[in-house]
Length: 168
Image (cartoon, one colour):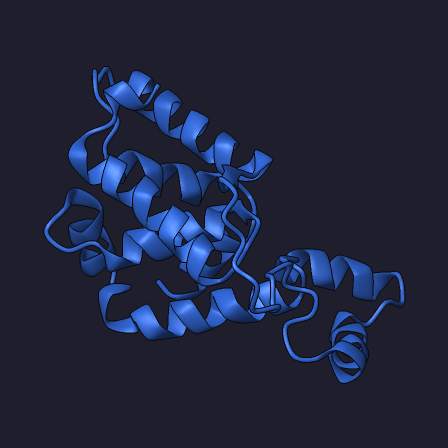
């Protein structure tokens, strides 16, 4: 499938792997794809993000993604649903972090040993890339660009779509 990706889309995928490695995450998640899109300059997705006002709020978007990762990747809608059942996610996060340290629920490796294994893509990240293919096919385009990855992130429910909606 990657042979249909443009250079910009390939750079986003490689950037997402880099973000996952930097966070010591075991898998590449949709949040890493969004972080890699935010890093891009001069591409179709970066122009779209800039036109929507996200360009000036990059740091706020990064912070929102970090907070969601601290909640074990739960979106605000999922946390609200759990609150409806009487489960206070912020209280659980606070207690776990009190016992195990900040970011204990993020799934990132906090030990300093180097993990040299190949970072695979999570099920959700694979679905984003598949959705990017569907977006390109629906638009009768023969390539998959970073703009298709951005559109795929916005139509799939989850933290990246929620964070983008919150920031314009």
